[in-house]
Image: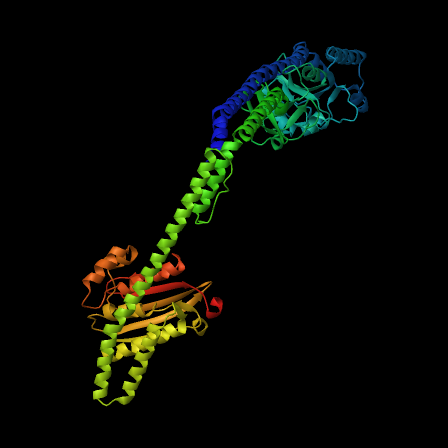
Length: 620
């Protein structure tokens, strides 16, 4: 890392980042505080709404309870309908007509005193102790107090078969409130609340009828209109929902009659007294608060847009980011204008040093200026000149070493192998086997011709010819010691390989792999082309090599060559040929190529030679 980046990094780490972290912490704490404070406000507001709604319902409960206590409803139910009586040809006395009108007037006067009541009617039911009496009332329409245009209430029989009937009976005189959209067949399609309760005869507490009273939403609307959460209700919506999530009342009338669960990203729980959390409502980040009414199976849900609540914090965040941006720009300008002269020159030298590290030894810095930086530039260039000289010297010495090793290998082949071959030819001559003598002489001549050839690389065809001649001579010497096969595709024959690559490997297999075996050795030479390289595989079924012997090929250095060549002055070398091939291949082609040995005692040896695919035409 250069000095300029260090200075900029120090400024960012010690000043910018602490400010940034402090701002983020403040930002998060403020957001958390906003949510917490709003949740508290929402709780008070929802409890206030719940109290107001309960007050409205309690007031209507008191009105209908008062009528029941004064037996207004009981009296209205005790008089038969005069119209029905006329139809049955029964004379209604004047007293009965006056009594009927008086009861009906008292009933209506009681309900008229409360302007929120929209309509009301009475169902006359059979006396519980005499279920067969007055059965004609079960199929009749209820007795109306206030008619409602466009709405036909259920008959008593229809109501009796409805689930609400059982709930009303269980309450035994207490009021049951039905919210809008819960049972439209009872309440109608308008978003109004309906109270249903049983009417009892006070003298014997028998159930004689059912009262249904529906109120207008004036007072409910006024509760939400007059409420202000956080000083502004513009971005807050209120919903009255039942325990299944059905929206019974929406103060903005957007989701009436729908399920609120499909607008939130997580299921809502309506059983707890109060809960508040931040989530998504209708795809918008919001604060959702829920308060469960104690007197009714409903909950009040408030939804406030999070963007409205966090508006001031976001303004603060924008100012903070803007100021932080000014700090960063100032630091960059300081870094560019005041440190560029020094750090720029040092950066150039560092880049050239990296080039040299990557192997570009010809990299040189332009020498400019007249101060200490010029001395630094000259020192770098002088050092690179010396490194280049030393590298060339080492390279030349390494090439000399490889060539000398190759000559040693060739020299070692000639004395021992030549002596043994000539001895074999002499035996054949004594036996007057002229044809075999001629064949042996030709094979020996071919081997010597390739060995003495000055080229470093030869075609694979020539190398295989050299190996084949060598193997045939060795088979004559060792008779039934081994057999061999050569399986090389014709397309590989023109590929170039280093001279004496395969022969030392084969020689090692014969002299050491088949040493002391009691079975016939098998030697196989195969090859294939794989993308941009060729693979030569030499396999034998000899005695194999131990791990220690394999490690010598993996960790081989010059001292080992000297020591081992000193120890084998009077007998054939052990492994020197293999290690020489390894070094020559890797020096010539790089560490991606070379010999890869797989062997185990008693399981033979597999040696794979990997070299780049270069044909004779590629060299021209």
